[in-house]
Amino acid sequence: MSRDQNAGRIHSVRIDNRTFERAEEFKYLGTTLMNQNSIPEEIKSTLRSGNACYLVQNLLSSRLLSKNLEIKIYRTIILPVVLYGCETWSLTLREERKLRVFENMVLRRMFGPRRDEVTEEWRRMHNEELKDLYSSPNIVRVIKSGRMRWAEHVARMGEEREVYRVLVGKPVGKRPLGRPRRRWVDNIRMDLQEVRCGYMDCIGLA
Picture 1: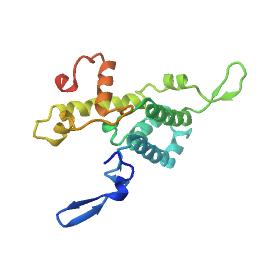
Picture 2 (picture 1 turned 90 degrees about the vertical axis):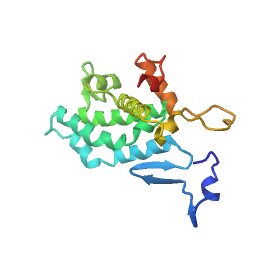
Picture 3 (picture 1 turned 45 degrees about the vertical axis):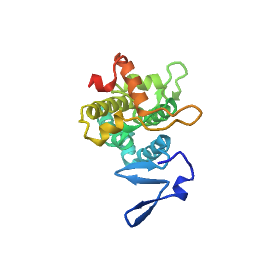
Picture 4 (picture 1 turned 90 degrees about the horizontal axis):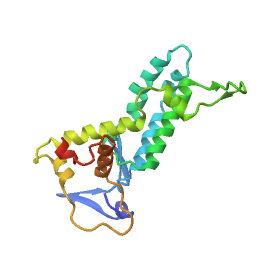
């Protein structure tokens, strides 16, 4: 991974006597990896996978199934496809908004339109109405919960584990000028503030 946009086209990786060309992106265990570690592109890829579940989404608009069963189908089939590997995502408000838009789209298909009491015309449900009908945690809450569980798991690892060393390690060098990217650790700190544990770091809390 590199901040240089041309890194994947110019440089190659040489191990022993073999040379490997760098790729701009590739799939690894269901996760889309980018040469610039672009989380928005990975989220676009997962949303495309979620939209590809057309056969399952057709069941969500069926009148033969109860709403509770449709919610279970969404949470056990579609949601895991979209949130695969979400524990390592570093989200901004823009990405969170895209994920909520996707979930509201599925919920509108599930619950259908609502008839207005005044005009007696059918209309789309508002986001607040969908929130009241869908009692389960929304998609962003699910991501934050999984992210904090993963942070606790990594924090309890020993110092000999590579993942733990990545968590506590500090890269050598200086950041480039401009606004820095939001890091995964920054998301964890914000998640801890929401549960009123902002004064503690994830390692000490774990």
